Image 1 (tube, one colour):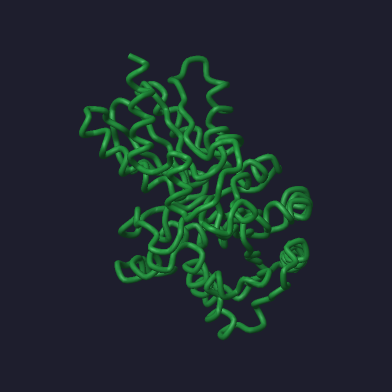
Image 2: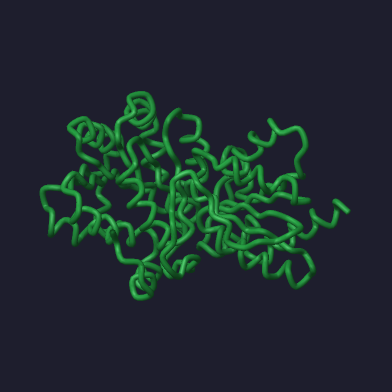
Length: 325
């Protein structure tokens, strides 16, 4: 088991999720000889340099060929290995959608697909490299678990859990270097079980990925204005933790979802679909990427364009909450 301590947490945070995953996979591979890493020319970007030096026969670089990467990963899984297939989310999910559907969904091969740089993490590379649709796409494929870690500590926990999990998993990485820390010490992580980080009485904010930290900051702003917010980390979008949502329905006046993903088909969509089956439930406010391609910019600028900065989240929540009175 990887050591969760202040030093490691600080180092992972500085590296950001893209590079921290290489450190995590190296430690997991030391304990499990079945672990292999397969990447489409992104070994350096995903922090796999040390992995390759220590386990040269367990790191496969397919070149810029994401569809082949998935096929090779499925072949390794077929031979009882545990392959982690790693590429930018915009290419591993979009370009390789068909082999992902066939090998991971239909054939249920034990592949762990890692989507680097999802959301707006690719900054000035622009809309060709932003991945705003990956949760929606993978959600529509039967039988694939979807995890979006809140910070680098949770990424490490998710990597360990995925290695032990029997079945295909997609892990979506968001944020950039100097990734804000949500989890400052070790904790229990379980695929499919959300975590309540803060308890409130008026509203419930359900966030995933990079937006967990921003939602916590937004809740502090709201608290100063007399609006008490529960904040939940819905790190697993599929299977969705319906039980924890059900517990919040009776006590909250408003449910808010926050994600660095399109408002269509992501976390907000998954929760909206669940609430449709409930007879009485609070109003749902979905915050996320707008349904349009926008001028590119750096990470902070893109979050601001989509009103995903903490003060913007608080403003939108406040306006909706007050309209319900």
